[in-house]
Length: 143
Length: 410
Image (cartoon, rainbow over all chains, first blue to last red; front, side, top):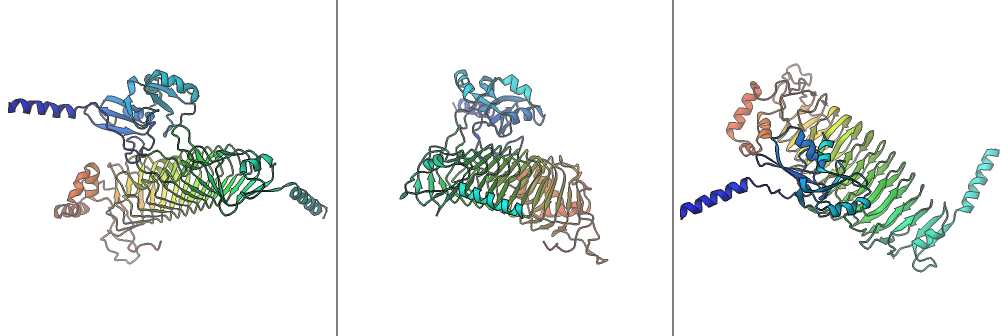
């Protein structure tokens, strides 16, 4: 019995080490790992998790892409971005819908906003006078 | 003579045209909006004491708006309070409170839209999302305003004085506290920030982004979340400022990132986690500054080059200098280091032995911050001393060849 519990516990512990869940960004306290600025806007933040399970936080989606391409760290396992409509909520970057430019003003002028549904993105496209974008477009836009 | 006469009559005619419109609770005109509607270019509107809840007040004529005894313009947490949409407007002597707190728009106490020669003077702004917002404007003066908000960590709040895509601005003698960034410059050129006090802001006291050819002189930046940041900019002059009490993991007196051709002269950095943090900076001269009682006097990352650090005083810092690599492309000359233990046999005021400002332990903690636990332990002191004699881990060209024996009178 003890052995079973022990094995289960180990699995749990190992699982938690390897978690794909993003850590919440602490606004006005955490700083961007790419540009060093303190993250203060919960609409444009981003986070990536490396293959080794390290978390890096960013104040702009552009900063995350630049960081991921800079070779500072091992390859990335997961990307997360802030939902533009919910304050400081991280969603999976590859499943998000994006808008760019228009009146979107992000901290480091990446000017991309992420939405969790296509509907919301469509709705805000006219409101923000923005153009549609995608994760691939964003990933290829920044060096 | 004729010209003088002509000028006299001209000025007289101008005086005759311009009217003074009075607004007050006991006067025929009760609202500022009505007064603006009646006015023409060149008029002066004087508003007496009282509380005015008129929603968003739009100034679309070239007028002077003066408040007597600080009349209160209350946005009732719904909207922008005062919008300036005309050239040559003067706004003076108002207390502007409670702009909206929307997340998608940026409601402001006072906002200037694409205009020039606007003067905003002697106002009190309290509890607004953004305080004063200058957008795409020229030749504006923002003077003697008190801008206050109550932002906290984990909360979205705007900047105190936010300037975007503007030129020739003068930001003089304002007091800003409790906003995200006290003063924020983005794409602002040829402007000056002089004699302001920016303290207790959530993020930066002053924040420069992509703003070239500016100067900030004789300001006090105290106790802000992360100090002052000057980023992605060139040709900025920073004179006579105080950077004080910016404590925290990612807090700096002054954060320099991707900046070039600038001059940091006669500033005082005291009681900060790091006095100056430099990354990707080049061709900067740091002269006659005082670094006192900081955790780190200066952190110079290996990505910096051609910076000149001359004639500064380093006093009572835990570490004077720190760096993250072995590449040294910056020069240190004739600084005073209170940790210098050399001698001066020829009595010329310059130490005869070069000084290595980078201590072994500073290098160790840079790569392994938790090593800080061992600070001031016997072994570390021993290692530090031996490193001083025979540099092995610290780069040996990280050196001040002419260290001063006495501190400079700064």
